[in-house]
Length: 241
Image (cartoon, rainbow, N blue to C red):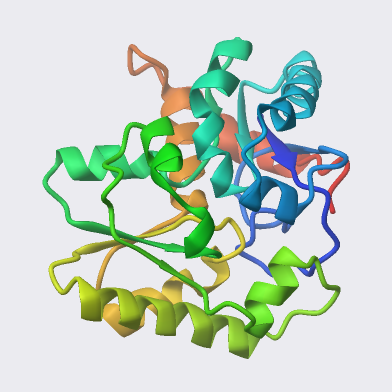
C-alpha cells in the first residue's frame, strides 16, 4: 500500500490528479497534512514545514504503508530529509524521474505550476541538473489561481490549454527537449493531450508512482508479489481532500 501525504486543499481533483480515488491501480491510503497549504509549500522554504509531513508519514507507515509519496512536487527540495526520517521509500516528487532520464542522455524540460518558485534547491534535492529548463503555467490564469489560491472551481478546458501553451513556450526556447516532466501533481489529467500535441514522452507523478510501486512489489530479487490487483479492491482514501 502507498501512503500519500496530501496538502490541505479544496480545489477539484479530476481523474488523473493524485487526489482522485481512481487515479491509481493499487491501494492508496491518503493523509491530509493540516496547515500545508499550496501557497506555503510552493512558495516557502522554511524547514519547519517538514515536521508535520514527517509526523503524518510515520502514521501512514504504522498503518502498513510500504512507501510514502507527496501531493506536491515542490517537496522535492526536502527529499533527502524526508527519506532520512522514514524507514520506507519516500517519493517526494515527479522530479525524481529527471536524474534517471538525464543519466540516459535525455533532454528533459519541466512544466510547473509556478516557474518563479521552482529553483536549484528542488532539482538538487532529487539529484537532477539544476539547469534543467523550466516553464510555468501563466501567472494569474484560471488554473494558476485555482491551485495556488485553493479555489473550489476548476476550468478543465483552460487547464489543458494552459499546459499545452506552457509546453509550446518551453519547446520554443529549448527545441532540443525530447522528454517532458510535469512537476505539479495536479497536471497529469492533461498528460495524454500533451503527448498527443507534442509527440514526446510525458512523465508525471502517475508514471513515477506506478513504476516504483510495481518495482517495490517485485522486490530486489525479482520475486514478484501480485499485490496491485488484490489491493486495488480495498483502496483506502482516508482524509482525501
